[in-house]
Length: 175
Image 1: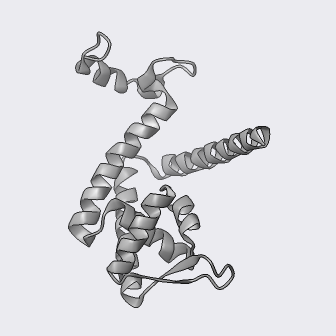
Image 2: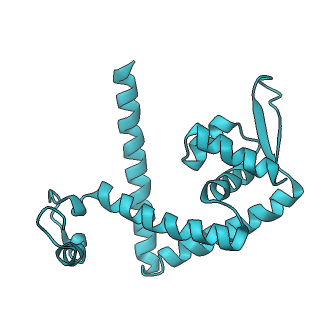
C-alpha cells in the first residue's frame, strides 16, 4: 500500500501519466519521479548486461565509455562526465587499471594529478561497451517512432540547457 492506494491503482495511474495536466501534483506524474524511475529501471538492466556480456560493473562500464570518449581525462573530469561521484569514479578507474584496460599517468599540465587513457585492450573493450550502449539505447526507444525520438532528443536538449541555466543561477547566488 502506498498511502491508502494499492499497487494496482498506482500502475493504472501510470498508464494515464502521459495525459497528466501540467500542474498535476501526484508524485508519480512528476517529471523528476518518472525520470528517476526510468533511470533505475534502465540502470538495473544495464548493470546486468555489463556484467554478463563484458564482465564490468555499471560504474566500470560508464567510466570505460567516458575515458574512451574523452581521453586523456582526469578523475575529477571522469566523475563529472560519467555522472558518478569522485569516490565512485576513482574506484572504478582503479578497477579498470587493475584489469589492464586503462593506464594512469602523471598529468603533464598539473604534475600533481593523474590522467587516464585506454590501453590497447581497453580500446577493444571500449568498442564493446559502446556497442552495448547503442544497443541498449535502441531497445529503450524502440517503442517510439523516428519523429518521436527526434522530438524527445530535442526536448531533453532544452531541459538540460534549462537545468544548467538554473544550476548556474543558483551557483551565482550562492557565492
